[in-house]
Length: 126
Picture (cartoon, helix red, strand yellow):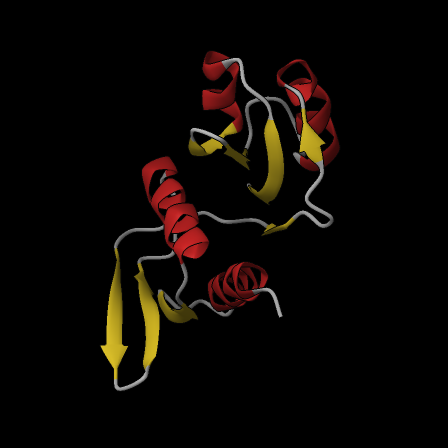
């Protein structure tokens, strides 16, 4: 079971249904991806809620998402190959973001160019 994949699917389905709020399961990677989505303007606010033994995020103000999902298998990515990954997973240049895990944390395809570091592809959003 992939919690991040389920979370992105729930967000996309709620957006397509015209809803502006949803609940997704909580873990560390999902929280970091939601922070990136918020920073890039794809979602509004989100908060972590604990009800008894269950912990989840409440995502509010779902914005302009055409598609989002995880990339499986999580392929390794060299810094010089970022443009090839953008061509493969994003519909056009400078439209959408790739989310990549690096030794320095979870970053976008725009930020990894400045880090000059490699990582693993995790998700795409546009």
